[in-house]
Image 1 (cartoon, rainbow, N blue to C red):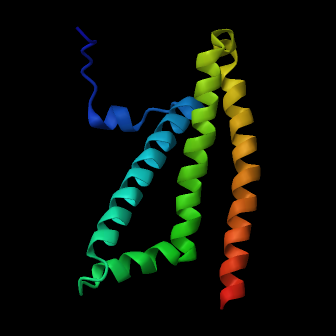
Image 2: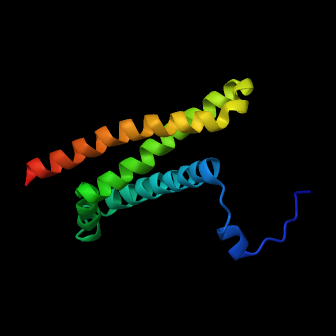
Length: 128
């Protein structure tokens, strides 16, 4: 049987888990965002050409630079965080250094995301 904790909503919202908690939440949000993206993409493909405007609306959202930058954030963070989790699972002795691994993850993420976001924005500006 699992632990039973009686924690109220306000107590849970005040939790200051810092790095590990933030990576946990962002990893889940990134995964959920990718699942929603794939689902809407499949639905837009099914309704395309049937006279419904929803497919066109979804495609307009997909090509907007604003959406692409946020989607890049979720996907890249999910990938890099997943790689960190995999490395720590494969080499259990490294668990002692999980906070340092999170810092390395953030450095790698910021470098890769900055390049991807700048490329996306400059491409969008060039299309204007």
